[in-house]
Every structure is written in C-alpha cells, then in structure tokens.
Amino acid sequence: MKGPLKMSDQFSVKVWDLPTRVFHWGLLACVAGAGYSVWVAQEMVWHSRFGYAVLTLCLFRLVWGVVGGHWSRFSTFPPSLRRTRDYLASSELSVTSLGHNPLGTWSIYAMLLFLLLQALSGLGSDDDAGFNGPLTPMLSSNWVSLLTRYHAELGRWVLISLMTVHILAVLWFTVVKRQALIQTMWHGVRQWPVPVTPSADHWRSRLGALLLAGLIATCVYLGLGLLPI
Ligand code: HEM
Ligand code: HEM
Image (cartoon, rainbow, N blue to C red; front, side):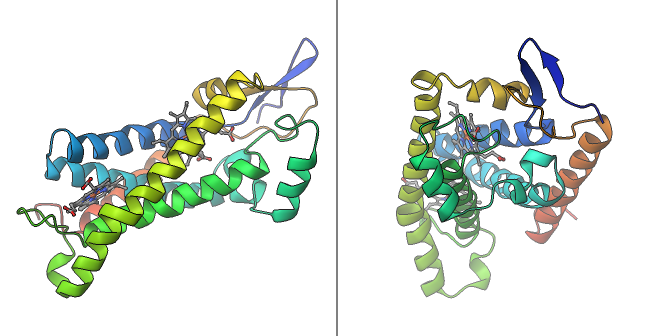
C-alpha cells in the first residue's frame, strides 16, 4: 500500500476511496431521481426504482463502513458528544479532522438512517392512484396508511431538512473556511500538514466493492421479488 506523498510542506492523503465517492455522488443522483420522478414526472415506477437504488447504496455503505478504506470506516468517525463539544470549542474549527468532523458525523449517520427508513417505508406505501410498494399486499391497511403517512410527510420533511443542513454546511466550509471538501469528495485526496494513514484504494479493494454492491443489489431485487424469474 502506498504511503502518503509529500507535496511541498503538505502531504497528499487519500481520504475517500473510489467506492465511497461513487456511493456519495450515486446517492445524490438517485435521491434527486426519486424526487424528480415523484414531483415532476409523476412516474411512480421510476420513483420506486430510484428508491431501490437508494436502499442498495445505503446497505452497501453500512457494510463498507466496516470493511472499506480507513477513513470510510465507522470506527474512524464514531458519534461522540465529547468529541463534538471539544471540536466546537476548538479555535481551529474544521482543520482538526481529516475525515468527517465530529459535528458532520451526526448528520451523516442521521442521513443514512433516515434514507433507509424512507426507502423501507416506501416499500409499504400506497399512493391511492394505482401504485403501491411491493410489501403492501402483506400488510394490514392500518400499517399501509401509517407507512404512507410517514413516507410522504414526516420522513420526507426530516430528509429535506437533513439534506439542506448538509449542503449548507458543506458550502459554509467551502466558502467561509476555504476547505476543499467538495474536491476531496470528488478526487479523494486532501492536503494535510502531517503524515497520516491513507485509505486503501487499489484495484483489489475496488473490485471487492463492486462485487459487494452487486451482491447487495441482487439480494434487494430477489428479496423484493423484482426479477422476472
Ligand atoms: C441528496 C443530497 C445529498 C445526500 C443524501 C448526501 C449524503 C452524504 C453522505 C451520506 C455523506 C457521507 C459520505 C460517506 O462517508 O459515505 C456525505 C458527505 C459529503 N457530502 Fe453529501 N450528500 C448530498 C448532497 C451533497 C452535495 C450537493 C454536495 C456538494 C455541494 C455534497 C458534498 C459532500 C461532501 C463534501 C461530503 C464530505 C464531508 C466531509 O468531508 O466530512 N453532498 N454526503
Ligand atoms: C429513499 C428513497 C425514497 C425517497 C427519497 C422518496 C421520497 C418520496 C417523497 C418525497 C414522496 C412524497 C411526494 C409528495 O406527496 O410530495 C414519496 C411518495 C411516495 N413514494 Fe417514495 N421515496 C423513496 C423510496 C420509495 C420506494 C422504494 C417506494 C416503493 C417501492 C416508494 C413509494 C412511494 C409511494 C407509493 C408514494 C406516494 C405516497 C402518497 O401518495 O401519499 N418510495 N416518496
């Protein structure tokens, strides 16, 4: 595994491995697709397809958080009140963490949790206009109406709020704090003043991630009875 490269007085450190970056931008595209298809195109079949893709991506990220590159592992960004308090008290806000900062960590876990809940509740939702999620035939009408209400009301607003805060926070760090967070999520590399462990990101780990994502997608499809077999 290659160590960090020295560039002038900074070290180039691989923070986000390719699978994590593809996960992030794929997630953004699929959430946008789910929103566009339900609000603009009113294509519920496409809405559900984007929703299954979000489900697959989030399940993949849960596993990748255990076996992925160093900075993608949940163990490197545990939710912690003490670390959050220290971070907020620090005068060097934003410069103290290489991966996700202790405050951003909370929003990341919240987004993953509520995206999973949104996709799962969608499976038991009914739009009363001829489209219903694949689990609705197995559920009582009370459950279907509860899940539909959660999906189209509470879950929707929680997610919109979390995503808005996330995007505003990233823009604040980019514009005010001059941190290249967006570029780092794009090419994976961040300049850092001291040498630190980089995330492994070689063809073997990428192939492993591809196989893992394919396995999870197949399980989601088979589990939901979506394959014509
Ligand atoms: C649908 C909207 C979005 C969702 C659901 C979302 C979700 C996430 C998640 C789950 C992570 C954690 C990545 C990981 O460790 O796997 C993350 C990180 C990040 N996202 Fe987003 N994201 C969204 C939109 C955006 C947009 C539009 C931008 C750019 C303006 C952006 C920039 C970033 C950056 C820079 C990070 C890394 C933050 C850090 O360094 O701690 N995201 N996002
Ligand atoms: C995480 C992915 C998903 C997101 C972000 C999402 C988002 C939304 C939103 C915002 C609405 C409300 C539209 C409105 O009335 O303003 C909605 C409605 C709906 N979604 Fe999803 N959805 C997702 C996944 C799914 C999945 C996987 C299914 C089913 C397979 C599904 C089925 C439905 C149904 C049936 C409705 C209509 C509910 C009603 O008319 O009250 N969604 N979705």
